[in-house]
Image (cartoon, rainbow, N blue to C red; front, top):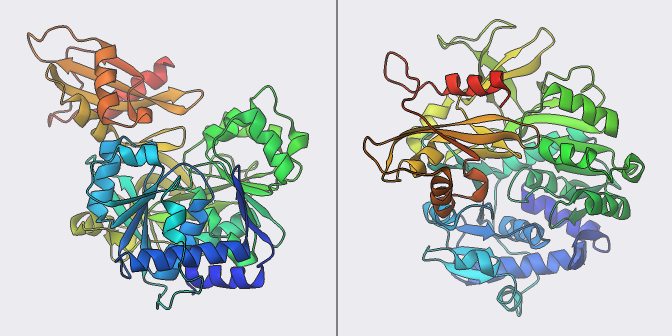
Length: 494
């Protein structure tokens, strides 16, 4: 199997005059992209970085993401993409934990970091950093089992874990998406979801065919739909929340999406009624995939031609994975039985960065245990039943209850808390918290606790609803029964 750098190099040489990437600030051909990516690779190496060193990125959607990917691949460095919506304390933790030697990002975001690391802002310092560097491909030997990225995902302990992804992992993910979205020559790839997340795996598909990529700064339904038509985008990644917002916008016009052939819908589950409405509005354009950062994008694939007939399934096993369902006793579950979803293959990460304990817990005998509960039907299609790790998915973004609870529990008057997700028509789920106060504590308002969370967490992670209660439901072992609260809200339709 190739490396990302080898694929990018071929695309740049074979399609030098073709448009490679555009955003609201301009356009680069593959020839121009080659020059800039090589200059950046040499600049990073001359700054004192060596093969295997980490480079963090902290910025919103812009075309620099694409050239940074290529530069890092050429130089044998390791990318650490940081969600720009994180609280500065959270971003700092990731950058420090990864041991990044440089962080490239937007000035305002960099200013909030407390990490002792070299910073290159894309507004002013970035261009001079590239100047006077060679535009030849660096002479660095990179193999398919070398790391390309460390992508962080929160664990149930609340501390983010860095999934180590090799070039092999990234290419397996890209090839899976090529199959899922039926990508070929002449397609145009659109990016509206953050390029630090799922859509970045779609970006790697462009190298195979020398495709144009269009990077959108933000999502605003009516203007976004007009831009899709103008740019003749044919393939893109969207979380279900964005799909729903788009099709329910008053300005939605399916005629404007005639060029769009495939939307890779992933990142969160979608209720069957919402899926049916989206299919009615869009037609057969939605290709659903199931994956995790640790096994990116396409553990299973549901082709767009089949999704309408199997709306409750997330598809059959993709080309670079094997899937099994593990029963509570550790044995493989019979067809139709519910158990933990496990997978193995070229998609599966190398392990968690500097966390051997978590790696050993997640990967056993070559199988990655996802923490998701599901069943396989007699045709081999996977049906996800629940999320064993209690992750809340709001607007396609993962929020882990424990990390929110840890912040709430820091408040002096708080005794204990339970955070969980409740159904939300717009965002899929909203974050709710039940809070028990210390005996004799002064009165505390919901607003005060939400403000406290805002000081320590990304805005999307703060609770939308806080209810003060006398006690939390617990089992005979004293463990808080999160599922009980979650089910109460579901039954009540809150």
